[in-house]
Image (tube, rainbow, N blue to C red; front, top):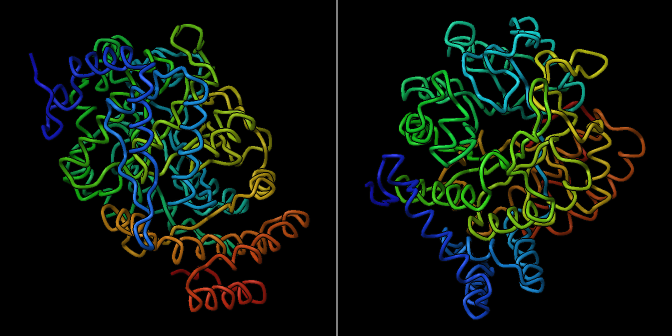
Length: 482
């Protein structure tokens, strides 16, 4: 029997089934233990240390106790602390991105994904480099600056060379004032050598969802194809780090397995990265199983309610305070609004989840990877965020200034993010407003910028940001950054 060891590089030891089961038993036993719950909440609370805000985070056991807790006033307290943590480290900034689907050819048999090999009635498509350029131009015309590229696993149709060519094409397109400044990559688990190639290509974060940490379920849900190898998939982030990618993004597909099991596994994976590499995940995503072609989410009897979903988001924020948290257009406007208050720091906008979807006038439905619940335009999402007191940020500066991995985390932990990310967010928002926004959004946005400039603590930084924003308004100069 494998023993639990967060420093191990073996999947069965750092995501240890016996440890998860013992954790869930402990959490169930203590879910009404008010003195323990209070001590865990106290540990999670942000504390001022001079000019710095410090968060200790929570272990997978502590966080699992909070997730199991059903005492309404304690849940409310969790939510308040989650919002405090989010505001302490990420302020009211919300980073914007869009997924770009390159190819839906796939050799895997995943039971929850319409790209699975046996689905014969989905239209298979792979973008040529010319088509990639057209998709990127369409995304730039909306105002996007950051993409997450997605592709099925198919060594013949989507080899690493194809992905690298696409990245090169994406970075090469400059259209009007548009440019994609950061490409994050969400492709299948691969080798250290291929991760090195992705790093050399200038990617931002490497994202890979575990789908489920429950090994028995994982093997059943991935009956055929290379993804069937649970250990190889689960150990991918260690190979990515070895290949020089220091920003990695975790996630599970909630609804495939019992959520408490998944949650414990997810926090354990974050602990493992911290223990081995000295830096936890750059992002954690929280997708839920959704309807898609040839996929009926009711086949999975572990679906979770909006209330449980809210608690999961808050508990992740308490457990892993410094990580970015992502929610996609899988979720409705209402759910996304709730999630933003509980710790989410990145959202997608105006997403098309089909290959070649951005150049189509109408959103294609027959080849989507999942059903998009939030179908608003990027302008509508930007306006909505601002009306709710958030700053939509198109910033990509940290990656391009080398502030990744532990360097980003130390910036975040030191509180210097306010002198850096805050002005960058305002300058990139000004770019969006001048180049792409509707008149109503412009009016709201420039008033927001005026108010938010006052919050920059360093007078010199504030002065430079103000001058740069005036420059953006009056000229074609772009891409100012701290």
